[in-house]
Image (cartoon, rainbow, N blue to C red):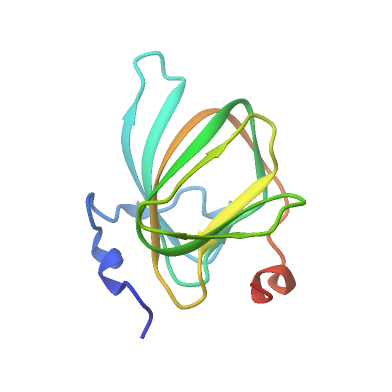
Length: 134
């Protein structure tokens, strides 16, 4: 049994729908769109990750991404840097143009709120070799 199974039902917000951006993820994730800024330039959503799931490497152009970890355990990594272990209460700020990925640990559900501005460029999947070494 994976840790933090209650995330399946949602914690602060409902778990949401199967992520419509699933083609850019390894494993299943769920998205609840929470709000969009009045000028439609900033989106806020809650993302729930099944154990072992993660998004592809990606870059936010002309913007940024802020992650507010709300439950579970996960990983965040910027290209060329060691992966950071994440748990509820952690925050991450990814600046414009920084290649990165984030996702659940192998044995844990993971949930974060993502505050995103700009246009994402989705890149290659995080290799199993890199992920399995964490």
